[in-house]
Image (spheres, rainbow, N blue to C red):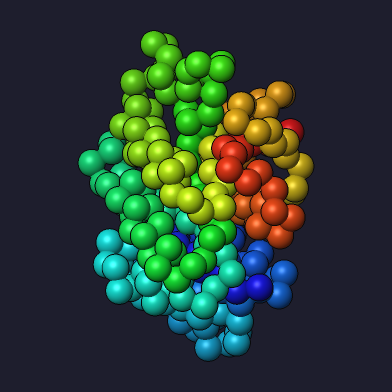
Length: 212
């Protein structure tokens, strides 16, 4: 299995890379600043550090060519002014279509889950204002995936703890899980995303997740 990881040096991306390598995957780790990956790249024949910009078509096309699946854990500013999540996703989708790669698991926020059959959490009147800007970026990325024609999964995370985790977490399709602790370890989030690829879980669905 060969995967491309966008946002490979970020809070969640670093765990995705490490865990994927432990599974025996070949990992193309994509990012603007990959200095931290260079030594590991030289030491591990299954790790390919790829310096590039997610808005550049040629960079992204080269990164997704010849892989089996894509993991996107793109970050960005919390105020919504940084369009990395939404516009970056559009470019990833476009380049995947050119190569014929179908499987993508992407990271979003909990606000994109259903509150009920007719409304998302972010669409509710009592949704916290401070979370709306980044939530709207996640929503735009999700809408692009929804109509992409790709085999997508959108993992909708609560607050992320910078911890390796212990695989003690719960998931659910399209709705927040019950019980919901509103937190998840970055390592457990990575584990969930890789499980979705390995087991072909949650195709065309959003995933709610919480630590137990």
